Length: 162
Image 1 (cartoon, helix red, strand yellow):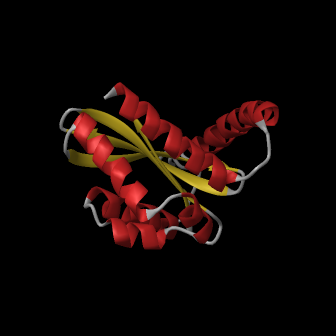
Image 2 (cartoon, rainbow, N blue to C red; image 1 turned 90 degrees about the vertical axis):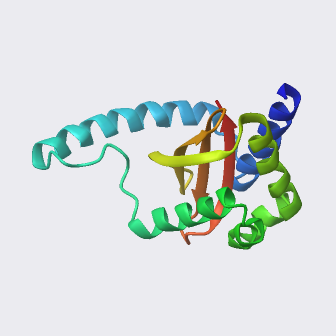
Image 3 (cartoon, rainbow, N blue to C red; image 1 turned 90 degrees about the horizontal axis):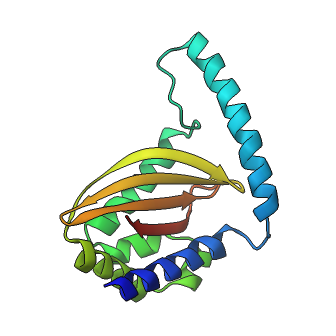
């Protein structure tokens, strides 16, 4: 079980990295994250003053959210062909439909049947919107990340069992 989870995490990490760009930005990311956290804190204070109902997540349009959730619905309902067809060409070059199916089957065999998911946050990384979901399974939890580019194409998908 542990070996298959490590393999799963490795494959999905490669996908997210391969689809996210080739730049090495580890030092810059830490500085950007600190700056973004300061900016987010300032923006949140301003938003709370003007509208107490504002979300703490960065604003992402409803169309992008709907696309991410439609993709995730296809995965959790085991409509792998349809989900695969939603991915952009670069992502399709990194993973086959059979591998996508295998990843999902590994997750469900390790932590049980899928129950539900809930959007917990969104992030923007290198011009890509990343939707982060908590997934509930019969035997545990997992985190789903679905990444969309500016054209609302699926450019990344990641599952991290918790």
